[in-house]
Structures are given as structure tokens and as C-alpha cells.
Amino acid sequence: MRQDLLKPFTVSAPGSVMITGEHAVVAGYRAIVCAIDQRIRMRVTPLDEPEVQIASSIAPALKAPLSDLPDGGPYRFILACLVRWSPPCGLRLEIASQIDPTLGLGSSAAITVAMVAALDRLADGSGVGGDPGTLHIRALAIVRGIQGRGSGADLAASLSGGVVDYRLPLGLQRGILNRTRAEIKVLPDLPPLSLRYVGYKTPTAEVLQRVAEAWKGREADLAALYAEMGTLSDAAVTAHRQPDLARFGASLDAYQACLTRLGVCDGAIQGVLDAAAGCPDLIAAKISGSGLGDCVLALGAAPPGFLPVAVAREGVRFDD
Image (cartoon, rainbow, N blue to C red; front, side):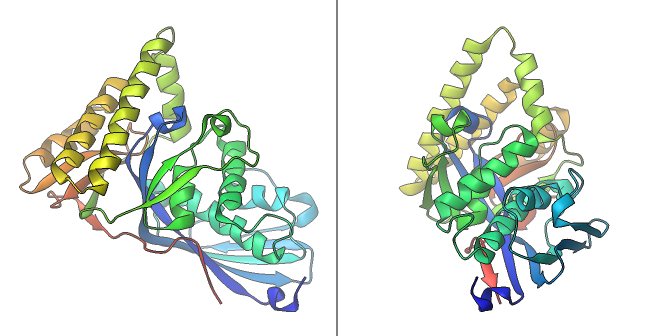
């Protein structure tokens, strides 16, 4: 290992919001995901002792030997990375987050991307792999190992920053994490974004399980709905590139209607959507994420109760 890599450094990654493509992305269709200017920062200090020390303002401190790391808990994504790619030395990790973990906003993806990138740097390219495509696949393996499933769209936004046109090939959807790469293409800037939290969040894995149970015995109908949603995502990407804001907004509104048919738009979300509908200069409003709680996204003028969100121009980065 080069001596300069033994020096402390800071790595950070942005959170993210889904613009369109929720749920259908896990069936191999495209999504638009946007990095937001709320970041997780992690100060990494190499230690002589073969242990990990984690300090954070959002969870109790943790200290454990590298040879016997615990499972689960608030640091589960970090610990899973350390188990999979053991660092060449002990580490002290000091974490500061601008992302409220109760809101989602890609906080798990951001910390996973930051940790994978930090281990890549410590390994000097020999242990994790240095290019973004490899880092994405490695991070996706961690997320799936913990959650059982995941599209990786939020990981792509945290890695690249900006607005991303994302698709995960079917081979990767089926768990074949090899040299195949996700399709990650940078898109132009979006209209102004704003979010409103509905007051509660259902974990994504639980939402996906509820959807599977609700559509049991109607798998062909579900596949047809996902295909319709995929067509709408394609239309949104095309309209956004032109740009054609009217068609872009219409595609997002139609996608929201599909999410309602899917069963992930509950009464609280619908109430927020109804209140936003009358706002002048609103382009579209829809669920951002898996639904059954979480946030509603608005594009264009921010409706009452919505908070503006800035786009993060940079993805994962090092600040020495």
C-alpha cells in the first residue's frame, strides 16, 4: 500500500430521489433518479489496531475487532462492506449526515457508496475495483445482501451525481453480479424540485412484499402493468431530453396513476397529491420512492408545504 493512502481522508456521497421508474425498475425497465444536495460525509482515519471504531451523531458509537464484526444495526451497510472487503488496517470512521434517515432519500445508498469508495482507495485499486461500474456492482451486492433485493438506481445517483437515466439489465436483476454493467446515462437538468414528507415511511422491502402478496395469482397482469410503466419511463426520458415539459409532466402524471393501480398510493399520499394539483405552474406531482408513505415529489413551482431540493452536481468524492 502507498504511504499516502494511510493518511486520513474524507469521502462523501449525495442522497437521491426517484423521479420516475419506481417498482418497474426492478423488472428491468428504465428509471430517472436524481442526486440531491444533501450528503453523507465520512472521515476515515487508519489505525494501527486491527479494529473498527464508528462515531456518528445519528446512532451510538461502535467499536469492534475486524476479525469479529457484528451483524445488523444502524451501521449494517458499513459493517457488511468491511466483512466483504477487509481493509488493510484498522479504521476510525466519523460520520456526519445531512440526510434525515427517517425520510429515506437514499441515505443507505449514500453510506454504502461512500464506504465502498473508501475501501477501494485504501486497497489502492487492488481489492474493490476503481471504475464507477465496478463500484456500483459492488455496492449493489451489499444492498441486496442486506435487503434481499434492490435495483441500484439510488446507488447510481450517489456515484455519479446529477440526473441519471438508469436501467439494470435482466441478468443483474436476477442476481448475476458479474462483469455486466448497469446502464447509467447522465441527463440534462430538471425543472425545480420540491418534496413533502407525508409523515411516515414503510421500508421498501416491506412495500415490495405487500405488492407481491396483493398481486399473487395475477402475475401476468402485474407484468403488463410494469411494461406500461416502463413505456412511460421511456417517454419521460425522451421528453426530458427534447425538452418537452408538457409531455414530460404528462408522463409523470400517468406513471403516478400506475402507482395508484399498483396499490402503493395510500390515503395520506393521495391527500398530498390532491392538495398539490391546484398549484399554478406545477409540472407534475407523484410518489418519489416505493410508496405507502415517504415523500411526494413536485416538479415546477413548489406547492404549499413542499420544500425545495437542490440537485447535487457531484457524486461520490474525496475531500482530503
